[in-house]
Amino acid sequence: DITREVIKQKKAEQIIKKLGSQGKSLEDMAKAYGPAALINTINDLSLNAGTFQNTGSNPLAIGKALGMAKGKRSTPFSDEEGVFVLE
Image (cartoon, rainbow, N blue to C red; front, top):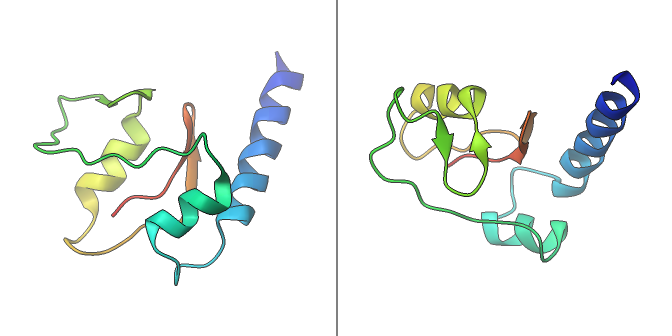
């Protein structure tokens, strides 16, 4: 349904804006989002994983995570399952 996808996209844009600048810690970003924010650590991530804990199928997020340099942080982005910031 197109209406549902547009609403989901607009909501993701609002969340990304709310998360704000890269200068914040992940904890500060989670506080800015609210109590539904999740911060997870994932060990041994691979292309075969297909999912992150508690979030469902995330091929885009997994691809971004595997392409990142160690110690770097992504900008907030959305995929089918939500808004992510990877570090």
